[in-house]
Image (cartoon, rainbow, N blue to C red; front, side, top):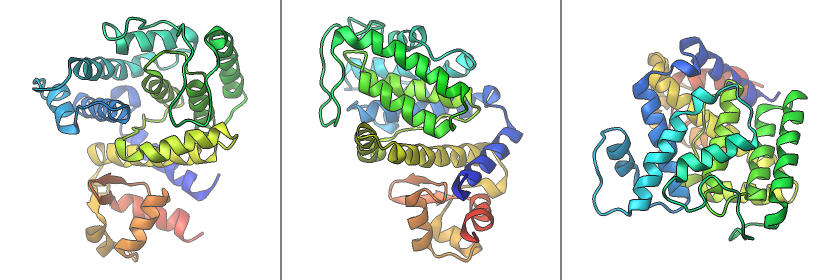
Length: 300
C-alpha cells in the first residue's frame, strides 16, 4: 500500500472512531445527499445549481423557472441516495440495479426500472455498449465477476474502478446509466465501510478521460480519481464531525502552521496527495491532514 493509501485509511479510521456510517447525524447526511445529488445530475446536464439544490433539498423550498424533469430528478435521486445506508450488506445484483433506476426515474422515463430495448451509443466515449439483446447476459457475467473479485479480496478502489467502468460500458438503460452507476459505486464503498464520494461538475473532464482510459484496459486513472474523490469526502465529513484540527482552512492560512507554501500545497492537493476540497478556485484542507501528510508521505 502506498503512503497516500495509508493516509486515506488513517482518515477513515479517525472518522469511524467518531461516528459509524449508519449513524451520521441527519443534518450532515442531508447535506451530503444534496451535494451528491447536485453533482451527479449536473454532470449529466441538469440546470439545477448548487444553490437550487440546497433550497430544494435542505430548506424544503421551491425553485422557480426550472424544468420539471430536473426538479423531479433532483428530489428522487436524493431519496435514492439517502436510502443507501439501509442497503448496506445487500448484494449488488441485477434486482438492486433495477430498483435504483426505478427509484430515480419513476414518472420521468417511460422505461424506468427496465433494461433497454434499443441500441445506444455514448457520445465521446471510447467504447460502444453491447447490443440490446446482449445486455442481460453481460450483466449476469458482471454480477458474478464482481462477487468473485470481491470474495478474492480485490482492493476497494481497484474493484470500484472495475465495477463502475464495466457498468458504464454495458450501459443497460436507455437513460440514467451514469447516475445509477454512481449510486452503485457508492453502495460498493458503503459495503466496504468507506463513505460515499461525489462526482462534481469540475471533475467531469477527468472522469470521462478516466472512463475512456479504462476502455483501453488502463484502470489506473479511474482508480486514482476515486481516491482523490474519497479524500475530499473524508476531509469534508471530518470538518463537520471532527475536532478543531479537522476544520477546513484556505491554503494561505494553513501554510502558517506547516513548512509548506501555498503553491506547493495546491499542487499536492491537485495531485490527490493531500486530501482536500475545492471551493470555487480555492483548495481547503485541515491541520490534521497536513500533520498526517508530513508523517506518512512527505518524509518517505
